[in-house]
Amino acid sequence: MKAAAMAGILSVALGQHAIHAQRQSPQRWYWQRGPADLVLRHGRVVTMDARQPEGEAVAVAGHRIVAVGTDTDLQRYIGPTTRVVDLRGRLLIPGFIDAHAHFMGIGQSLKQLDLTKAHTWDDIVQMVAAAAKQAKPGAWIEGRGWHQAKWDRSPEPNVDGLPYNDSLSRVSPNNPVILTHASGHGIIVNAKAMELAGIGPTTPNPPGGEIVRDARGHAIGMLRDRAAGLVRRVQQQQLDTRTPAEVEADAEETVRLAAHDLASKGVTTASDEGESFKTIDFLKTLVGRGQVPIRLWVLVNGESPEDLAAKLPSYWLDGYGDDHLSVRGIGEITADGALGTHSAWFLKPYTDDPSTSGLNVTPVARIRQMAEIALKDGFQVSVHAIGDRANHEVLDLFEAIFKAHPEARDLRWRIEHAQHLTAADIPRFAQLHVIASMQALHACSDGPYVVQRLGEARAAEGAYAWRKLMDRGAIIANGTDAPVEDVDPIPNFDCAVTRRLKDGRTFFPDERMTRAEALRSYTLNAAYALFQDDRLGSITPGKLADLVVLSKDIMTIPAGQIGTAKVDQTYVGGKLVYERTVTSGGGQ
Image (cartoon, rainbow, N blue to C red):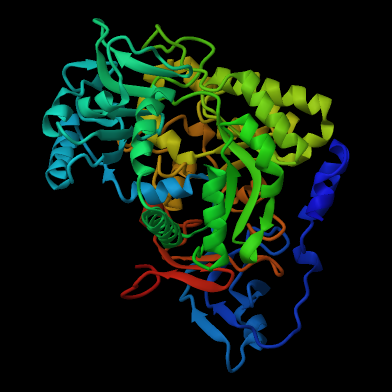
């Protein structure tokens, strides 16, 4: 079937892919009645299935759900070998589906310095100093998660709130240091890293990037977007000297850490927003061995059109390894940078820095080239766009392609983040059938400085405009962008429902989601964005038994308590992949 899908003209290819994607739907799936393998009962089941919204119990046979109903209804599914779980009144929901994460990045971040909780630049310097004392000579010191807008005070001196790297270089003179911004769209490096990369007074900015300099032209150590590649390439050259066994062991540990982190937080499926062909090969091997307990939807990294054109057709996967790995899209193609680094691409200059309107990281013509390659082979396209101009340009590009190829609308192309929109572009998502793949928690993380960056009127018009998008018929798929944010769905769900900032303020409250909308964005909508709504996203007989048990009912408890809920159990295909130690009743 794959060979047929790749043959012929565009319409034939798309049609064959549609056939290829028609897996067993819940309505066509049947079960030979008898005792179930697993029954979860005495709980509150929220199914996300409009035909049966709630229940008390769920029965599972093999990897699939076979029944939902009352405890009495499902008593007949319990036999001598059935595992019975007493929910003790707890909430059972579909497994969370993170529609935008970076799976390998999550694992890698867990091996680096965690800079997310640093209150000042001095805190970070102290962390690096401690790491440098333990590091082997010449070893790279890495950290991730700092954000200058979230520090208690600005470092002095600074450029655009960003510190000079002098203190970093003093505490680590011989070990190169890379500290990645929370957004992932910039790094601070020390003098040793700049020396290894050959960055000096006359080094030009690479296309789509910026070497941040002070008024005297002195590079302070901050590299925005593609400028980070100047140092990353040198680091990779060193990594390439490792033996194959060392490379494989490190990658396996990365996968193990990431998978455990997701499972422990109730994430049963994650969309990995861009991996190389080599990494996809490695993940396929691990999935084939049964070493990846959660499900992955992996996008092919879309940095090289030439590489895509040569290899993409042979990488189509749909449900490999008992539905643990699918590869049906390319991305995350980066149209612009991030708001926190002043590199998100806007139609007008930043209010707090009128000298810039941000960066177009990947030229629009190149994005079109990659999108047309994906279209030829029936692949989904995901484009990162944060600023209003980036979103406008991508929508224009998609519209032009859809006019030439109307069938492409069925490929569920996505804009990742869609954080800042003009009023005129908001209805275009629904009109063009473009999925808004957004991360609710970004609104609460960025909220304290959004108005500072953009001004009140522009922020009110289209900053994290969930309600405006939904009211016009757009589909929002939720996620975390982990490791930019923690992959934990509970804080994300909390922000979607409350838009409450850490200082207690509410960030444009009219854009809040209802709890049902927030859960749908994280389950059924996210499954739709991954072409997996036929098998995931709701507790429906025939669908895969991906389930999460929560300690508290996030659908009914007071909004101020949502953040206290914990994941008690996570099931993937009916298999328990995580269980929290609970010392007493279900509300603990």
